[in-house]
Image 1 (cartoon, rainbow, N blue to C red):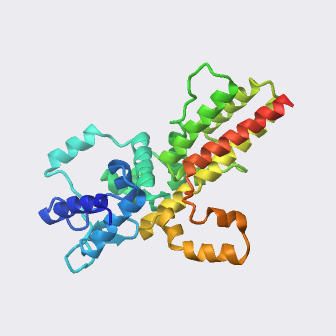
Image 2: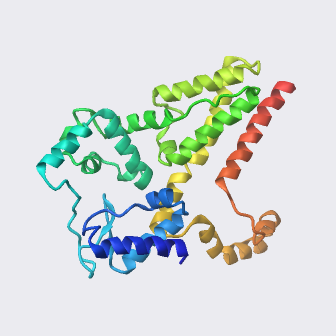
Image 3: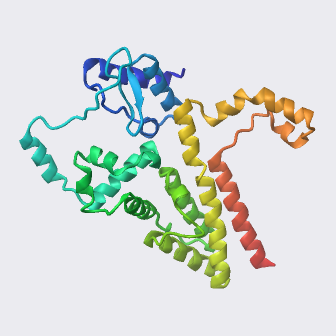
Length: 311
């Protein structure tokens, strides 16, 4: 157990024991702990595992990990903090009126912290301290909400200003797209390439890519296909982020630890089946890093486009 996980667990334990966190109240999700405390997802997951082992927390489907109702692990009574009086409640509501943007941002926060599978109109309403029916005055359905979330998240991308050539601008722009996918692990799996959602932000990105590639002197058709090649490569890598985060959150075991636990079996298989290339990596200290893999893949693809232009 790392010091970081024990420290964070101790802080949450103090809040539970002191009554600052009440039975049924949600604890910070593993992703929220990871983001706010700058720790690995496995470390954040161990925080929940430690509190569950002590009987202080319970996983609740559709809600997340919450403070246990009693020290014997009984089912919690779900509660949320509310203003102390009606005047305070109405004042808070007036200060933050319900609108499409607020609903969308709340949906993104839930998906970022807990995964899009935890998103529901009821969950959003719970966070906003309102009734689910009130949401339908602004969004028509969960599908409508997810579409707005995708538009909003992709809208965070913007072309990087600079005076470099088309190759430099292409790399910088796709690095920014990777950062958007990193910030929102749920986003890439929601995006379709064969039947693309008609999102203004996605069309803006496609137009930027085509214009940037066009500066290299290739046709719009070739530029569009090169854009699809780059986009699908990055999206395909980003699709790995969500299930890995879920697996780590559920098991408390990160990918490196998972591989390490199976290293002896992998070593035996590579020797038995004469896989010399794979055998050279086993135990060599090599670690698969998605950010490094992204950079290498992007460089190879852009180099390939440049090589084609030079031929």
